[in-house]
Image (tube, rainbow, N blue to C red; front, side, top):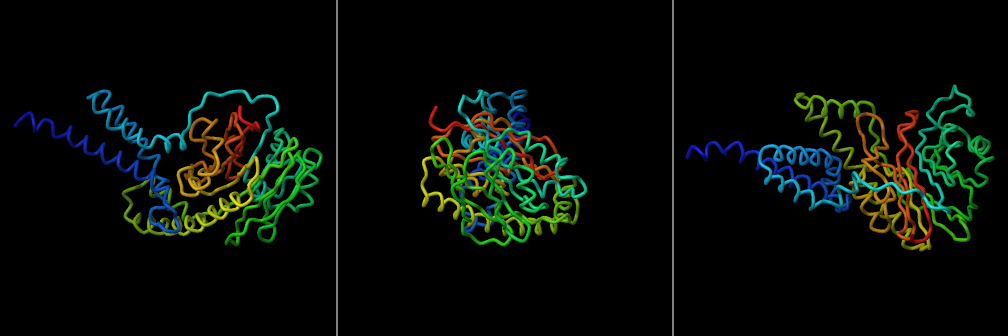
Length: 358
């Protein structure tokens, strides 16, 4: 009897560990559910990292006190291994071979909205000009007129297309390769859009889809509420804050799921030898949006990047929401999120790409 009583704390820790593992896998697999049909489950992928960290903490705990119970966390992580790799990949860095191209996707947030700085001295503009990227896809490229954009980059990128979404808000593609055509992908949104371009790259026509998918439209108060929930979980007003945030998350996730479906349908209906799909998905790597598009394409960051690769840098919402997806016959090298500046609320994501299987 006494030995059983002594083991009660151990049983409690085992039970908590099992609950954490179940919750981690639940969060991982709900990302496979279409957010249009199951909006209530659409945000669970955002809390997957928390349960992953808890599982790792339990593994370390059992390593110290009862090694055999490490199996609980180990088996739990094996069950959602693909989700762990998607969230935080580990790859041996390999130098890009000769003939690779460098591609960048960057939400520039109106080039930092620093109207007092001459465009030639703007940090984001200078970064792009010095990047030596062969193809640059921009989102939220407002803040300057399209003619000014041409003047800033035409000496490096002779081929450019800027497409208006609403008023002065537009996406753009800057390329060292000829742009054969461009068109907007049809889906419902007033402030976001996806554009499909066909580029002639070394004799092949490459489909490049530049996306700025539905944002959560969180205002400053929403972001402050999020911080309060994280930093002060015992706050009495957190339930109201939580309900307001979840409502916005579900609404945006539902719209974004439909947009991801439209982009996927477009890619399926317009087959090309090589396909690249990039941009600000406004959804973490563990989400239906990412899952839907990676059923068709590979994630360059998952295949060649390292670590969580956080690309959004504001309000404590640290996720990788910018992506470079590629068809399986493209090999990525050294994908990375370059945290060079906080002039924009996003960091650029970059990868070298070699067309044709290596």
